[in-house]
Image 1 (cartoon, helix red, strand yellow):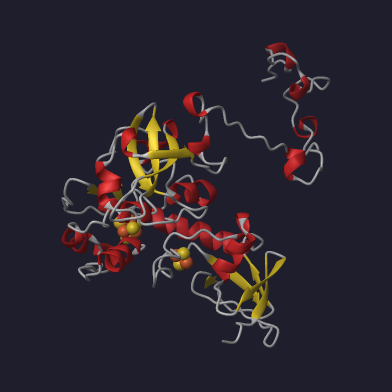
Image 2 (cartoon, rainbow, N blue to C red):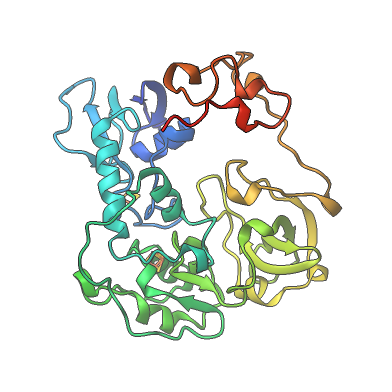
Length: 365
Ligand code: SF4
Ligand code: FES
């Protein structure tokens, strides 16, 4: 079989080579970091996903080597494949940042601001997006959507008001349960996803819809309101399961297992689907062989204050110099050049004691 040709693509001024047919999003993920656009509906493990939420919009400033014309509109990077010589702008494009702010504002139109009581808080992709791109206020003057409550049984809680209609759970129910009972019912403002999930509830893999949901629309009833994710210690564990791989992440506090989830990769996607028995029924540490602490991105709120006690201290070892190829940190801004608040001879960061009112100029109002 002939090798797939490699295409050169430049994203945010970083050039890489990827096989023909790769999407811009996956090419950007190869570069990693902020260059990778956010994705609320695309899920690499779910066929047909993507193209719904528009958070992954990018600007194609050069179409290809053969046809260098820019693309006239921003494109969904999860659905657009690279061309040889293509140049793409993500965080380096003002148009993209502006459009993404608009998309986030749109996603939040109907989404309730109930993060303080939502079980997804701390690991919600919409929460992260709104911190990065959200506005402080809303221009929406109408009532938010309300829905008739659907009972999805003892394991899964549906909050339709939080749903952003990404269709991930639809694809999961369809592709893992093997029977097509699904669909988004109604359209526009009335669109909702309930019925197909109710009908697939018997399936041993349906619990995975909780893990793929980017927001708190589908949550685990066995964990509901029991704890906040940032108080728990995620631990990799496995068991000999006849149904699934049995490789999970346990979310413990002390010896108590509060919840069990699939392991997720750096893009927040499930590595191995797990069965309902592992997820909902095995809540004793003795059910599992503990492998060790799960590595969590240190920027995540979940990584804060972890791993003291039985699993040992796990402090970040990186220093600025280590992660910036030996470059020393430099003063980005001298506070005295922009503010007269503290006395000119005082540099607060150099004090070897807490700051005191005498370090500041008296109030001149
Ligand atoms: S319930 Fe969650 S996974 Fe399903 S469509 Fe809504 S936001 Fe997406
Ligand atoms: S991730 Fe591309 S449109 Fe949603």
